[in-house]
Length: 327
Ligand code: UFG
Image (cartoon, rainbow, N blue to C red; front, top):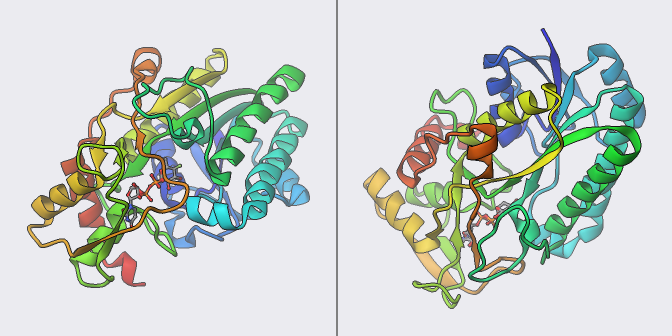
């Protein structure tokens, strides 16, 4: 069985990717320092605890498993925090990725799937965001991701390390079988915060800004189901293993929903009231991030099947009710 090194495999998206890799016949090897992940989410292959900045540990793990590819999810990802302590983001995300890339090249592992973000496009109102759109990040988190994209291009030129870059829109939902799901500590994402508020286990939701230039004044996002998202990664891996050229793909559905629309849908799914306040804007938030690309569908054959708001919130709610949030 071929090994795939999954950095951040104990996290939300990484753990779903491990499940998808196992189903696709690969052995996912999780490399994670557990700063944001959970060891009990590592269910589908071996676990190697380690930090991205620890080159010796990375060398050891590459030598032990000789992976055919790396899927690189591990990153600090809180937009707000990245504005307050940008150095942490540059060190961990950019420095850590550099160490990982150097270890991969030294181990002759030359296929790399990278988690980037639509936040690298920045705040471009009313512009269709496709893979050729200008990247103009407005926060340090997104800037760190764009820097890693640049690094990947340089490493391809110099060392022949090929990559698939996925620019995620807003990832939501959970494994419908509830083996893994979303659990961040602290939680900053809209849907899990809202479910906690609905359940009375969290304070009421605060809507961050109601004066945006959108039809209802709240920010618009393109939500994509985590299972659809990781399916694209399996297709991206096959793309690289069949020797195709490096490529960038947006992963979004092309449909945008405002914060108020997400609240309405959550009320419909749970059949409960959503307690909320209207508050000021959150620093670093873009007004509207919606994908305008079908490249992943056309070229990879990606066919998202669960990325409608109702299914995403239903799956997140089912996972929420497993009680994982109370651990
Ligand atoms: N929001 C609220 N209240 C909350 C939490 C969020 O109103 O308590 C709003 C935000 O202001 C935003 C929307 O809900 O308008 C979505 O916010 P999230 O925090 O769920 O997601 P973001 O769009 O800020 O960021 C997420 C990931 C980033 C990624 C980005 C790409 O956290 O890593 O999607 O859009 F870069």
